[in-house]
Image (cartoon, helix red, strand yellow):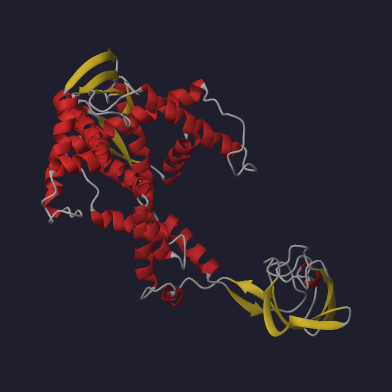
Length: 442
């Protein structure tokens, strides 16, 4: 087998591979010899069919397998000898398309090699970690929010206003005929919740206890029940109670509603949650700082095909974000801009760099981490968790999408441990501003 280099420019590589006909014949004979003991053919005992006869009957079919194996072996040997790692699947095509049995097989292989990543000293990288300590004001704000979410309704005098709760009996009819599902008793309806047919709640503003009112509405054209869709309806409503919202007291009872033993225990839980939220936000800011410094300090050639593919993906994604009315892909060709190109170069450079750091330091995503990631994603499909698990198991691309961010974060954490990190006490507002700046840059 002969491998001849035909192109070596930058990261582009091309090779001409020649597999001698004698080597192919030897592979076919080897396969036939392996199969001979199990072959049964009329007129011969099992395992006694002559190789010449087997070759005449099965040789042509086995030749294709032998050719594929020979080329695959040649490619594997080339990558092992050269140390090259292709950026994408190599392009392989027959050089002598009019090949006939008995002739050498000639193949052209081309690819872009992954670049050599220069060494860098992670310990020389200086990072700043923003630290926010939850103060009592933040804890009290969170407590007040919990109290509002746990609000009660208390009886009030006077007319119902937006945000009040009215307890009503109602019966619905169309053209004087009551319809199924259109009646209820002691129904608690919060005005402004938009939980009823459009126009229903608005007509109950100003009612008082004991009022009887006819509410006239029109069912939407797209209403779920076809018998009601687009129909005019009347509801006979009796107002039995009017209640105003009242926030729950910030006390031990509120704490118990949220699963804590008492108010102090709830405050402790809130502090821990706030610390985690601030910590995650701070990490995101520090990660961006790290990636910016890596992008600036570590330079190397980039495979053009990877940059081109990434630029097209960025342009395509941004176009759909700007044109949400287009759900499919029946749109004009989207050409990446210079800005898309620069962003693609950054992403490819950082992706290759982080991948190399992970490879050199044997950083891997564990089965447990992958299982947790799949479980977290499956929660978005309630009732279909099992189907989602099966989909991920059968879809390598989906597994890669779930694995990639976990791997990236593990590599980033590894560099964090080596880098020189200084802490800076900041306010919640300063941290929030830094996070908002990150979002604006994305």
